[in-house]
Length: 510
Image (tube, rainbow, N blue to C red; front, side, top):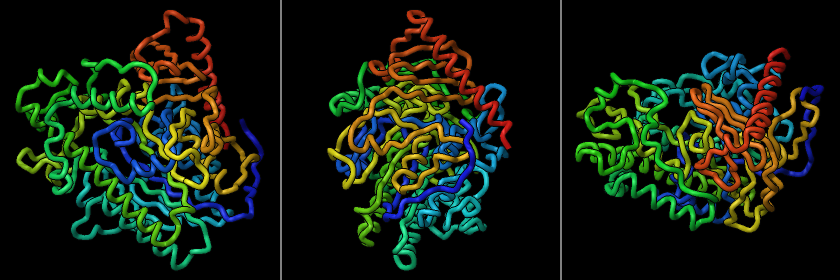
């Protein structure tokens, strides 16, 4: 695992531009091209003229995923999350010096690196190799954030600020500048939308456009998504049963009083809700959908800029989510005013377990869990020159630890002699054809553990026993085979523990 340090080797031919688009708390089936009823024509078009991956994984939570996405390492390898006695986290924990972020590797290849939106990594963007940044450090206020930095310096939001639009504005501004001043250089643009993370804040016109689409309730919407997923050929196996007793990962009972009688903490059958609860829950999903539809509009604006500067065909576009949809229910920031219009700055609403179960169709669990619902989300690659056939579905398993190796492969950067080898692999071969599923992937977050090895996945909740699934046939983890194959459980458990031991050894490396 540990190798000698050396400078990166770079190929001489001009590499492609890279646009990495990350959204926050969006479930597997929220996009139209992944079975959803949410209108996302721009992103759907990227999929129809690119690739959709059906088995792409994250670290089940925002800050561990972001650390892995930009460093190429499991977050526990670099102090950005904990596992057992190996401590780390998203607060003050810092990466070791050898855990550089992606711009460091891309600079020798001539890349300019740009960041826009959420950060949630230690340090700040410019200090970590980005050439330009708009850093939104306030996830509680979409309309008037109190923590905003431009190029690592405090920045006051302009009047009419809405985070999703502001992210696109800055990304476009930087692309225009690149075209004027650095057209001879390739760029890496990391666009990190804060939406559709709570609080559910959306523009009034976006909410109005969604209308009463969700009046039919979460049972009907989930079944409709499942039917579309099957027709698309994205999923093998059965639809998971709704876990009626699975509530939020954290308990905030006092805040439920603030939210009122319309809030519910479990995904109970829709017809068991009162009329007040149905109305309240319908509104929440309406805002969630509006936030995603606004993302699609803003992605369209960024793509228009790429086309205007004649860079679209030479840009590899990645689109993904940092974790599955969230079952969390809480009130933060400026609090929740029950009299404020839902979705406005005065409100503070969360999606909750009822609609999160829908957003994560067909999977079980939610954000923070390492079951598929928390850790598997859409991944789209658009590069028509090098992906064939267009619109294909890839069953090759991928993970956010693969993003750095993939981008470095695209850039022609070789890092075979780095001090600590990347645990992931380049997905570039899968752009042409599926490359099998015999790899091993590892997870841990707040006591929720998992390991996938080929056809098998071992997974447990923080208070539960190890569960075993033949994931190639049962993506939704519906048939626990742990009692049937105890030897396989022990084998995979030892693999999981071996990875933890490697992480312990890494902490000794200075």
